[in-house]
Image 1 (tube, one colour):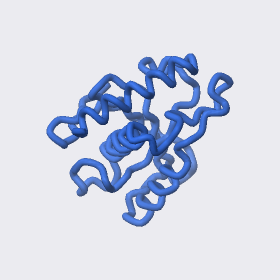
Image 2: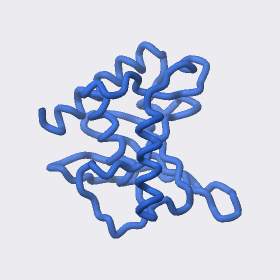
Image 3: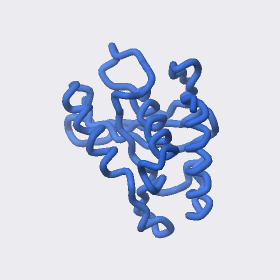
Length: 155
């Protein structure tokens, strides 16, 4: 199965899970969006950037691929009232965190939220923490996978 097909299958699975859970992911209305981190098996992006939303887009793609392959049984890990019991991404996140720390990409302790899905696009929000502990303004980008390369525009 091609990567695009895997992506579409995974998005379909997530859409079904979201429908069952009663959330509105395309509009980003859930109070606690899932966090994702970079995975090194993702499509190629410019590694000269210390940390960028591209890593989150890569992670989103890989997570969706793993979902499509049945390796994780739940699409989200929300702590909202509607989805309190949904789990399944913990091992993925733990492995990705190790990868980020090992490659010195974890600058600013970024929190990554996936706030929308529209095949083959992923809307990614990045929130970084300043040295004094305050959060920077969130940055959002829409990422599209084309020919194994991620391209983005502003949301």
